[in-house]
Length: 384
View (cartoon, rainbow, N blue to C red):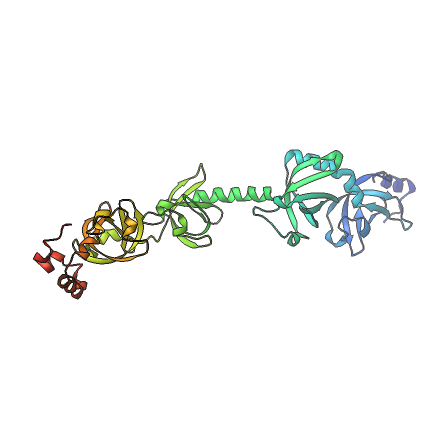
């Protein structure tokens, strides 16, 4: 290699940056160790970035080839290196950067360094970013300590440059991701699909089911074949249920569901299990001014009209029966279409001992045989 003349050496130096203390310049990481980072700043000497001048004080976070904006503290540290600071560089440029980030609503990544009253403090290029507890998650967060040291994607929701104040939200990022996932799920779900979900909330009109990234509603009318006054009669929060999709409204993001395992309506086979003029046992479930309702089987209720409570005149239903009473009733009429049954306590009480004893002996045959078939003329004197 030929020796370079003094002029050629000076020409080489002229191609490097002319740097001064206080400048902020671009550099490329050459190497790092636990104490410092060496940076090429396009100068005759390399730059030295000590651990104390790093916001997180961890030189090993920086890898060869990483690009950095650094602040020149001293042109010569006494050993021929340029002393640099990343913290001071951030202080110089970060607030202008925050302004642009805030205006464009660009997401940034911060590292949580502290838990404070009402939220956590994250660091972004040496600057503090406050994240309120209410903006950390989609759900309420009581204990904030697990967030210490976490890297969070956030969006700035409040910025005051003159007060050096930055407030950000991780929740906004989560909501955006959830919206994308929800739209994707809505595009895939169709009427007729059978799914499994978890009951997360009960309302007077139905139950909300968590299907993963979206919720669906089981209306109270789709919980049972019988009338349900409140969803709590059928479901509890936390129940895992199988549901069938009835309708998907993608514009309104609503999914209508029904329980997939609704028991068959017992009224469908009412004539196989009950017969007019048969006597059955039941339990009084409701008292009304006009009579008492008696449940004779699971889901099968009939009405004992006030005139069928007793052979004597009854002024108030509560004079004869109370809710919870076990009673014997005769079936006077079955209306399958309207799911109604007319019953009588009076008719049973009117049976003489012989007729009643005969009935109890053939109790298992009652569903197939009417009382008229069994007792013939013995019932003629009764007035149903």
